[in-house]
Image (cartoon, rainbow, N blue to C red; front, side, top):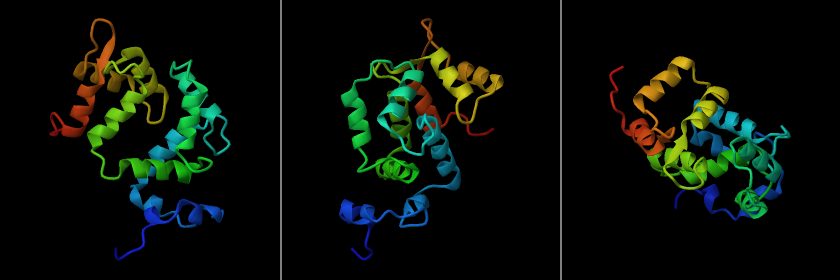
Length: 177
């Protein structure tokens, strides 16, 4: 009750004035610099046409590169409507900030994997995960991939249990390295 928080302000009030980068974007203070950099990389990957705004077309294109070819227009519409206006980087970061507030890191990582598992199988194809990890953002080396598969071997069908990966990422297995 002491300090006025942006969260409780009516949405229209702050967004009406088109504020530049230095405006009231204290959303950046919620994240470490390294996290902001990672979100920026993710934003850049999703912003397929590089116009600085994530649109339905950007979402459709990025989902298509991940093998999701038949995403309904309504689903894309719903994703874009989660924001109150155009999704630039600050809005993108704010959306994550709101979603992550008080979130358990394991749930956050699990949610990220679930995006890649629309059927909800609890697994992800080894080839797909390997392609993502070796071609996007902080690319894994061949050695890192070898270590990943040694720690989390895929089943005979080539599926990887990502719930197990999430557990180990957040709870650790052997921290003495």
